[in-house]
Length: 149
Image (cartoon, rainbow, N blue to C red; front, side):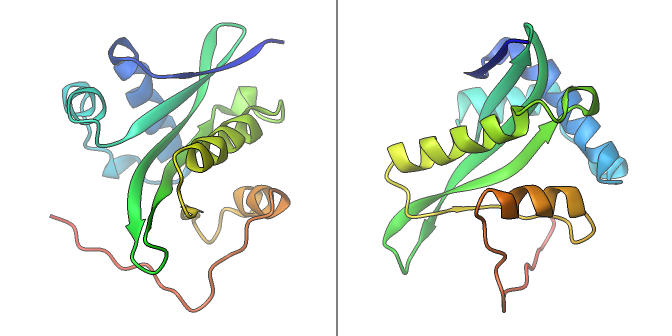
């Protein structure tokens, strides 16, 4: 078993979209995926609005982490926001999720970020347990709000 992490390149965009769709299926949100290969390629590689790390197991892509930078006015520093961390079911429990998570932490520290944040669905107990095992603390007294356009 050989696990490799690498930054995505434009030719990876179709597999990135397939991983996003697989994640949406697990999260029961398949009807909410509107992204296209073309839109993702422009956002990720032309405008660099977000970045993707791919995980390969024996040279097959089996997971990804997608992140972007935000800014903390209180810290006066940028932060890394991990939008998605996902590993295909058949590749779970092999350390791939942990490797992707640790790589995001490494990037955040290397880039001088003051913190790293992400959201987890309330019902996703396996993910919540995973993050707590990694030393993460749930935010208390904060509620996420959203406007969609």
